[in-house]
Amino acid sequence: MRTERALETVYKSILGENSLIIKLRNRQGLDDEEFSQLKDAMNILIDSYKDNEEIPKRLALCFVDISVRFSFNENWYNEKERDRLEDAANELSYLAEKLFA
Image (tube, rainbow, N blue to C red):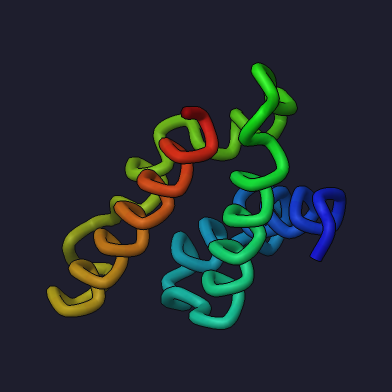
């Protein structure tokens, strides 16, 4: 996966009309395959931008308050799934930190 494709994957997964976030808000749960592709894309972008002082603004926007986007009403998901979503948010936060470092 090249940088442009990785950017498209991140934009689609975080900001898209049928993004992971929208699916979670619609109580469809976390799409494991899409989440895995998102993490792969982020790792490519971490490598692609490691020597750059700047990253695209839209990419930065994807990760502003990312953990908040994974917070839901307690009644939407059971405790096990809420823990899983919290872990996913933490993984994305960690990858975002590496991207912005």
